[in-house]
Image 1 (cartoon, rainbow, N blue to C red):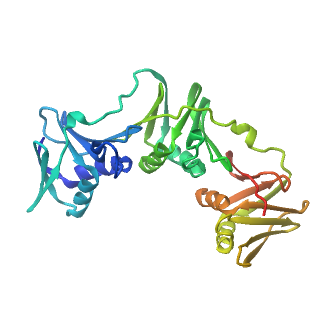
Image 2 (image 1 turned 180 degrees about the vertical axis):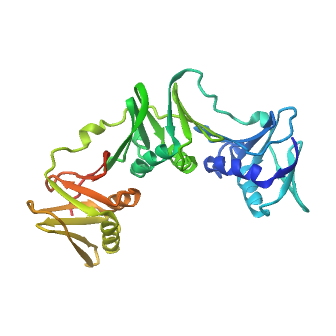
Image 3 (image 1 turned 60 degrees about the vertical axis):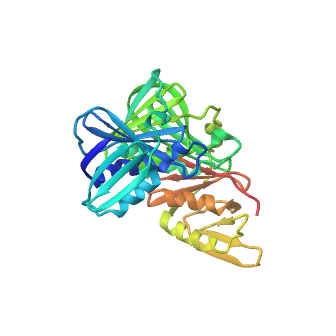
Length: 369
């Protein structure tokens, strides 16, 4: 590979798009590298961890020529490019097992590995269904549920997000067994019912890469894989093979205790109370009486925080405990100015919804305090 007068951002931008999945330490050293390819007047950068593969095309055209490819250490290359002036022009010269990168009077020799040895995920040719969604809507859908995904749970199917396509809607659900987040969006068209579980890492990368605009994102559901194409990016991911819990059985209905709260007010109130919560159990008591909601946290040092809010409530009294982190998570991730808290009895889960959206539900299980 021989490139001259390449704008710094022509390499840095696609590199930044893919480098999030590069592991610092991996049993396969070549996976610490990215694959840089020149073909048909375009430059592309690919990274993979054998579960996910992201390819980003550069916005900058390069001279036409024979297709060439080289691998470069992802972190070092990214750090070098960031450290160069914004208007730097690069030259890249591959020489056997080394690549010489020049910018002005700066020169860097980087170790390379054979491009032919770089492992690739081959996308399945068996297409099951294709859906198009505006990037802004897909990103918002993920942000409403992703925080409820499990982390390193032995129930591997919880370490991800359930995506359900059915007729004219797309539903996203995540749960760690203690709380559940559910959101949906309307689709244009009529699709067959399909469910896939996206790995946690895939969801987090998509949340970073999807743009805040209405440009389309194309979702291709393949056999044991899913592919997202948007802008200059293509992401191919394996899906989790497992049976996701029946979320419809978890979401409560028929509750009669409802209070509407200013989201920022209840968030700041709980953040103050959480300072004195038990560091291990993170419990909070919600005491609901006529016209009043008390938020009480205590710890093993006999310290206690009590906050009281005036609320429009006239029903039966209720004293119920929750993990305050689970409540803070949802309050920080919702963009709604108001939320609705709904309760059953002291042994029932709480339901959090938004007044302006009937397609969002958050369920959190109670805990004994």
